[in-house]
Length: 245
Image (cartoon, rainbow, N blue to C red; front, side, top):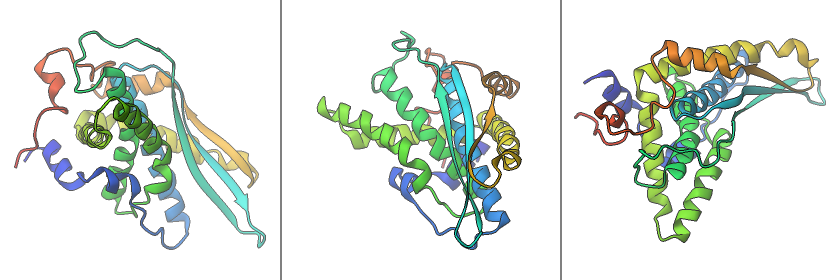
């Protein structure tokens, strides 16, 4: 079994499991704090790399750390993130021929790939699969598209399954995962550095420049627009190839 098939065999799950599984965090300590920060970094890095591979330019890639102090003087930190595209409304390749309209499919997959990447990271590190809070916005985006499709007679649940399947395959690709891991590392450094700026209260962002994301992608063999189908057999690998038994 090749690396791609091996990863899928270990990580594939249903859409509902990938989006809504919510294991208990366990003891709150430095290890769990760092693990949750890194999970957020992998989540946003997965969005960023997939967007680049779909030909989407980026304006912001970051993870926020929100610091707070309770009444007893205890310190807490929680993490969130954002990958913001540069709007290119209507700009889709005339050669794309996905089962849904190109824009629907692309938005659905780039939303699903954040949770897919975070889930792979959590499984590989053996940390709790706390997906629910981090996936709320992504599930909302996919559901919005699904409802629009449903109004046109399409099955929104089939759409969810399709984009989730594609997202899991994207993060199983060795070159893509290498790029995601490097971007996540850069985000981790930037986010960890916010502690000195926080003064134990408020929200501070750790940001990575879009140009650095592009450079990391190219260094790992992920080219801009690699997931825009052009009819070449190599562009079909994540969408129609079944996993080897």
